Length: 263
View 1 (cartoon, helix red, strand yellow):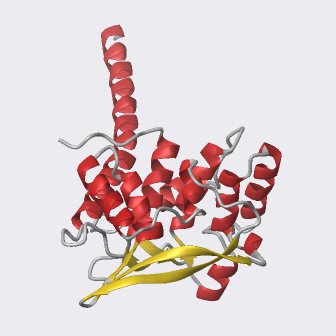
View 2 (cartoon, helix red, strand yellow; view 1 turned 180 degrees about the horizontal axis):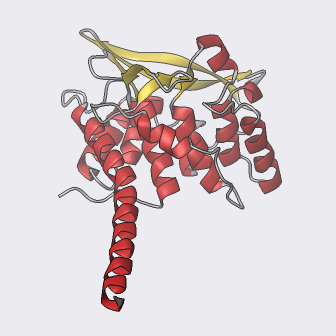
């Protein structure tokens, strides 16, 4: 009887470890698939990634900049190719998105940004985003900008206030900010930014319940993350570079996992 009890207890313990192991593998496998998706998009003629598969627009900021950072450890050669291609176009900064990595920071309040076409090659367009001198009135009504303000703001208490403002937009499914109200859809990349900001705040905070699992569920069969979803979790749009990059960063920050060098 005692031997049977011990065997039973050991079986339960083994099952628990197995379940925990599988749970730990899920985000790692998802982010690895995400990186594979990004690498598969590389246009070797330009050394840049298109906005999404089949697109003819190549965004330097934010898309290719984010991809270069996400691929830096797992695919260093590809990352370096992308960085060199960005610099080849005479572009070195955007300001706003670089705050995610503690690089060049656009001071608050945020300014308006506009797209700029750099050059065209056949049917392909290389484009980037640049800051203007015009202040962005009402930027606090956008969850993604509030998360970026959490990275930008040096005062911890002020950074937490930006976080709290973003949390007031959470409706249980996503961030119902001005963009979501206009599009009648939630933006997937804002889930990634929320997970990232939650870990970066001092002290860290808990993201809205279910954010991590919801983001995992929005990866499609290509390995990339789709742009939008609705209140039922139905996916909309293509898997694209920006969304996939921010999803990977958010998931890894939350799971405490980092990228592994490619073999």
